[in-house]
Length: 548
Image (cartoon, rainbow, N blue to C red; front, side, top):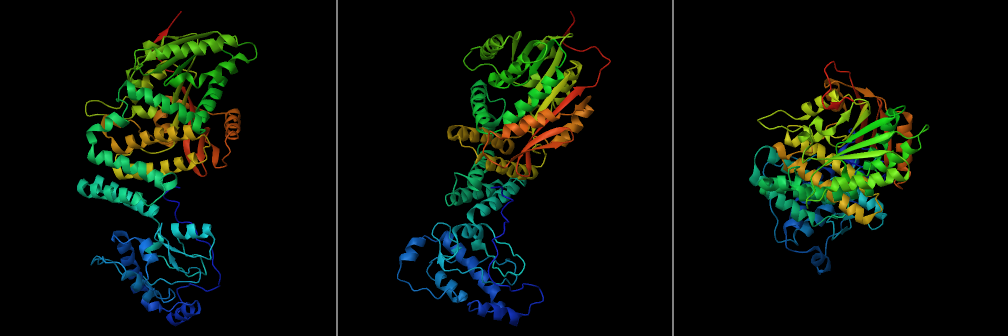
């Protein structure tokens, strides 16, 4: 559930009463009496304040609701709202007073759609035994005021999940203002409140990850680079590869990236007998079996395919890149595709130099970046972001095509609060989409993969913060200024992406075309963007190209 999707309608109730501003108090009193409530409209402000006290007492009191329900105390008729609330308050020993600066609450009207009869032990909210369970859940999450319906909206009717979101925003604001003592106390409050919600799905799960990320930022800032940064060492890089693989299996986002990029590369290689793919993030080579098989079926015969795969050094000293290359070579041999592989081990993409790639001037070159360019946007006081240098030598390689897959998010904003708000919205939607995943082991590990992204976005700063996602509009501007022009992803790419979604039972995934680019999202929110680019011819001699 996205934290901003809470304002859903609670459903219409019986009755045709009008809630227009011209309704007189006497008329409202009549409506309340007709609905069976012994309260005047002029008293509702005081009732709401007493409800606020009741909620505070219920949260802070050691008295369990189950004890209250099983006691011999006789509660007043709930139709007499004021007396009913007072009787509940009397059962709690601790009744904290309201802050003196609490603003006056507006008069709110109770309508026939709500019949508070029992305090629910799990959620501490009003429920209606006569209403369907689904309607009760909608009333718990949020209540709106539809036309012709009178509704009471109080703090009790806002569930713990929504309050968690509010506390998360308050905590993030405290962090931005440097009030770490207040932020730390909010962390403790949220961890306590988290025990009252379902943390296996929905906002409870998302809130748990963001609470953890905020806690790391506040209490252990020196360790953030070890958990979320790219400079985390080879062991963490190995773990990331494993989690990446499970994220690939669990949901369609990486499959969409691979299929879309492969289709664009295949079309760019049309008519060329010698082709060279430079993969900025080899990651087990998951993307390339499909391209090898597609090239094998090309009319006129397959070309000579060279693949240069960039990846981190192996943690145990093995040449894992070479092992991946051998597996791909065996596949290429089985389908009669001439194949050559070269592995380039580098901890960071900016450490790669163009001469390492051994590009031949007679081959068509494709540069493939799957969620890698955003990692070049960071900077430190001693240097500018490496994105400019890398895009510069890519352009001088003069590739036929550069495929760019990125998160459709804006997590590179300088203000922490803006970045936090955007990431909370984005990853809430991402976790919503993961609920459609039926592969449970892969789903669990895919969530850890996403959790690491959240931790890096929220916890880290400076060079340790590498998950600097930017939306497609910003990439268009940046790549255009760097000397690239956009290539239109054709109808075949759109068809393949749409066919891919048929493999997933959920109907919420959607592919959309955006000015020649494609996006994959969940319902109305784009989450991943795919674009293709071509270098504008450079008068200078290309770097790293070997002339035969």
